[in-house]
Each structure stands twice: as C-alpha cells, then as structure tokens.
Length: 331
Length: 272
Image (cartoon, rainbow over the protein chains, first blue to last red):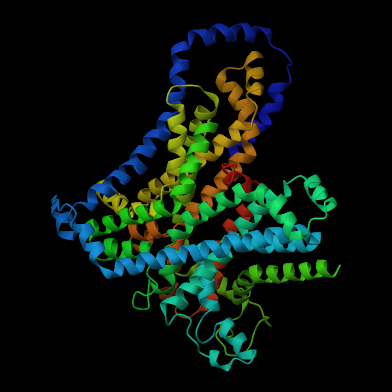
C-alpha cells in the first residue's frame, strides 16, 4: 500500500515536463534491442504465479486422487509405506450408510441456505430502491456490520445469543409469554443445530448479495421503467419484463458463488457442536475432517474429498460450462 | 405514501435484524462482570466497564494469536498481490501464445474448493517439514488468494486504457516507467479493494489453521477464539470483548473499500 502512495505522489512530478525528445529517440532503439526479452517478458511475469498454482493447487488436486487409491492410515504414514488398494476406499465410503445421509444433508443444507440468502438478498435489493435515503443508509450500515464480522466472532456471538440458560433469545421469548423456552436448548437435535447455523450463514451472506444485486438494479436505465409505466404495466409485470432480464445473469453469478461457498462451510458447523449431537449436524466437510484428521484415515478421507468435488461439480456443472464458454469468448 | 412508509418500516426492521448481533456483542462486552450471566432481562446495559477488554487482552494466548494472525495474513496477502499484479499485467497487456489457457486456468483455480484439498495439503506440509509452522499457513493462504487477486486485478488493469501507457512510452518512459507512473497509480483503488478481500479471506480461515497448527503458541485468532470456552469458561463478557477485538481490524478495512468490493467480485458475471 505504501508503494501505491509513493507512485501516486511521483506521478504528477513525472507529468510536469510536457515532452522529452531525447528520451523518445533513446526509447525506440532500446525497444528494438530488447526484442527477445520482450517476447519472453509475459512468460517471465507469469512464471511465479504459474509455478505457485501448479505447486500449491495443481499438485494437491492430483494428490487427492492418488491418495484416494491408497491405504494410508497413521501406520503407513509414519513408516512411509505405499499400499495401493484400488477402489477399496470408495467401496468403504459408498457402502457406509452414513456417507449417503451426510451427502444428502449437505446438499439440502446448501440448497436451503443458498435459496434463502439469494432470495432475501434480491428482496432487500429491490426494497432498497424504494427506501427513503436515510433508512437505506441505516440498512446499508447495519448490513456492513454483519458482513464485516469475522466468522469466528459471529459464531461466538450466536452461541451466546442462543445460549440455553442466559441467551437473549430465550429470555426474550419468555418475556413474550412463551414460557416453554426457559432453558430451551437449540442444539438438542441436528435439524435444530443446522437451522441455527443456517440462520447465521444466511445473515452473513445476505449483505454481499444485496449490495451486488442493488448495484445491478441501480444500473438499469430509468427510461425502461418510464416506458413500462406509460404502457400501464403493474409492478409484477414491470419486474418480469424490465428488471428480471437485466439482472438475471448477475443473479446466476451470485447464486453460483454462494453455492461454492456454502457447500464447503466447516467453521460454523464445527464450532457449534462439532457435527453433533451424535453426528446429526455433520456435513461432508466435517465428515472429511473427522475421517482424515481426527481418525487419521487419510486414504478414506481423500476418497470423501473426491466425492465432495464430484457432488459440487454435479450441482454447478451447467453454470460452470456456460461460464467457461463465455469467458473463453471474451478473452 | 402508505406503501412507502411500509417499505421504510420493513427497512428499519431489517436494519435491526442485521445490527443486533453487533449491538449484543458490544453491550455484552461492556457489561460489568457478574451482570452478564443473569436471568434478568437486560437488553440495555445500565453500567459500563472496559474490564472485559483488559481480561481478553491479557488472557494467555490472545496476544500471540493476534500476532500470528496478523503475520500470516499480511505476508500471504502481500505476496499474493505482488505476484497477482505481475500475472494480471501479463494477461491483460501482452499477446502471447498460451494466454487464453492461462486466463482460463486462473478462473478455474479461483473456484477450486480448497476445503476438499485438506488431506493432500496436510500430507504435503508434513513432507515439507512445515507442519506446525506458520509458514505452512502462509503458503495455503497465499495459494487461496493468489488466483482471486490475479483474476480481479486483471479486470482492473483491463479497465485502464492501454493508450495511456503507450502515450507515456512515446514520451520517453520505458515499459516499467510507464507501468509504474501511469498504470500503478490508476490501479490504486482496485489494488486496495483486492487486498482487503484477500485479507478478509485469510483473516477468517479456520479449517487449515486448525489442522496445520496444533501447538498453542502458534495458533491464529480464529482457532484461539473457537476454544474460548477453555480460556473463558462461561465468561461470555470476556468472550464478547475478544470477539470485538477480532472484529475491529476487519471492520476498519471493510469501511474503507465497501463500494469497490462488490464490483470486483462480480466483475465476471455471465451475460445473457
């Protein structure tokens, strides 16, 4: 950041002399001489990033597939043994009923959280357009506070708010006359635990979605709405005919991003109940952690990782293909 | 008119919904010890103290975790930004063979589900003898943020007309001079926005920080805070004060760049 500052200060100084003829003549042959260097330059500039990506992303991707075909528990790891087991790890995982339950739970959880946050994000973006400026600013500041809170901080705050005995939520519900909530535990079942986690994720995801979609809505030309108004369109018709086509692509983009982000949530679920009670709030990332790190079954965990990527790929395949095609056209 | 006030009312309700956890975090942190855990209905604090902050600050592990978090996050982000800029400039300013595949590689790498690479990363860091070292986290966070930085910065560089650089080169600047004096200053806001987003990503990261670091004096803040019950017991006031201290750096960065961040992340939306 300091580098940016100094060049900013240096830029006007560099602009002061309007023309420097000697430098122009000096620059041209310099460029010709450097022909070979110039041709190599883009590759030199790319090299660090390329090496880093191949080493730190490319290799792990290869390695997760390779590992998934090995028997690799703590013993093999310590002895440095390489034991190939073919598809055994996959058979183990796919035969385990728990894997199917957890996968289904993860998909349902992801769809619910993405649906709720994108839907609410869109509604709030639409609402922001009609708000009185000071109300809109208040809402934006409030959303910014939610967005900026580090995940572990917000998770800790939610734990406190949903605390069984002294949490403000239960106390409020009792004040409102729902006496059965005195000492009510929100974490006694998997569904209830995941609902609280889901609420936390949605609460923190909405600001980004609402801000993005609002930016998209503000960019729609006003005369389109005026034309719709002259034609006597109702609010819903205007939304269908004017707003929707204009923000559809943005909406798909943020839905895709949200799916990528919400599918792999680990921190919030783990910190609340470590996937409990009795494994009922375990999702795929938690299962991978439990098998791989807690039990040191690295081969089995790698198979779970691969299956995780397959499921995520299946969910996002359609959009991903389209995204890559469009980007390829643009480059 | 009625419709407008209904909308405003909804807007204010939502503002409360989003603000409440922050409010509750701060007020709980400010309540004197012994008044936090109470069955009384205490939505508004009646007396205020800063002793919880002192407690959190002086808890064993807090300061070292804060230092570790700052060290790991800042190092990774600075490296990702520097290498990201060079890659971004190459991708957007040069024509060369293989450019297209490289740009697509960046896009795909950016979407790589890192959590699914936990096992190979763990094995790799162990092989490299980096397990239990903060440098393993720096490498992971650098890898997580690099494709995003390169991709986003490429968008920002694309937005700066190449004619400006050419004009500077006609006026006698070398390629480096033109970049340094023309492009880099114009890139400033984009650079700040990108680095803040990368900072937040690394600042928040929990899974790798938990898996790659076991010893307490090398913990980062998220991991330290996740085990707050060992440090605080049921001292929610202290836990809330620690959460506030954890939030402040992120919030400050957020306020600086809020506007630009949205544009950066969704710059690649598919049209049509």
